[in-house]
Amino acid sequence: MLVYFLETLEDESDKDYIIWLYNEFERLMYSTAFKYTTIPQIAEDIVQDSVVNLIRKVATIRAMKRQVLAAYIISTVRNTSINRLKAIEYEREHVVEDSDIELESISTEDSLERFIQLSEDLKALSLIWTKLSREAQSLLEGKYILGYNNKELAEMFHCQHSSIRMKLTRARRNAFALLTEQEGKK
Image (cartoon, rainbow, N blue to C red; front, side, top):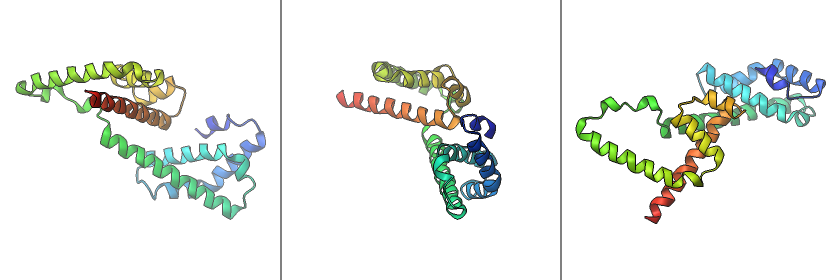
């Protein structure tokens, strides 16, 4: 994965520097990430996102002394970890996946009420849909209507997996704000 991000650098000496930095500080980055999570996949994502952030700052970090660089790397991984965990927690609290909704679990007494509520929700959503940006419409449509997962959406929008989650979060927030505004007008 590191090779992919290195391709964004044009200067060979910058590529060599980032490879050296990664090899030199890999253990430090992972140990910092594991202070915030015990899940290896999340720690790996955190380290990869941190390396991307470091690549963006290559001109700045090249001039740093080793001790300052180590502190900067720890700070970068810490901030990335906190942001990642906040995003995960937000999704856990606010996102309802399609697999979490089982229509079979709705009793026949609740079915009519649920159907009425769903049709009211769809009507409200159709009123605010055109007020959403084209990107927000595409994201929400892809996720909730077409059933694409975050990886597929990231490929479609040419961005990272973590970026697509943030874009989805923003799109949902915008839709919710518009729905709330619409409710206030009634």
